[in-house]
Image (tube, rainbow, N blue to C red):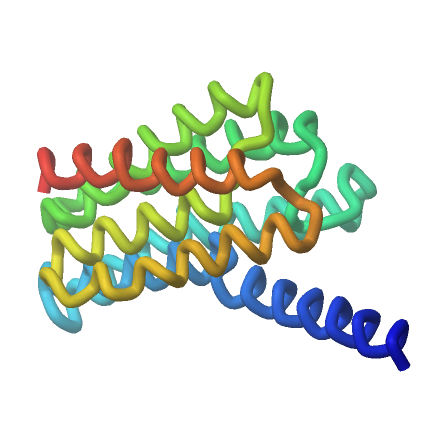
Length: 201
């Protein structure tokens, strides 16, 4: 009994960590931030712009990850190896850059173009660090999402900050990152993406 209970506890915490990591994965976070920013910028028309931006920032990267797995380039959509991230991140940035060019050419709301610029700047910093160290994409995107939505909608949203802590725990619990890598990711998402968005919106 003394060995079974700890084993069950470890399994339960692993299941919880996997659930948190899936729910706060970068793809749903990116869809959330683009759609909600779009709603603020122009209600239903803004949501359409948000979905358009999500196509380039979330759907295309997800398609690249899925295709890479099917072709055998990587065995997990979370890309645990640095070399895999160094292949995928530039491709994702190129997709966001195309989306940015399209939204600017089509006269999208300023908040939408500001959001895409903020994504590019954050991704560039993460890419630079990733050449030597596996900073957490999960916490970077999640904290950037929370920061942008706080700037857009106001003060109640910082109350959700414990979710970032919970996400960091999940990534460490799953052996995907060290605590430092999750903290640095969260700091980058806030201190890079947030100010860029605030300046350009």
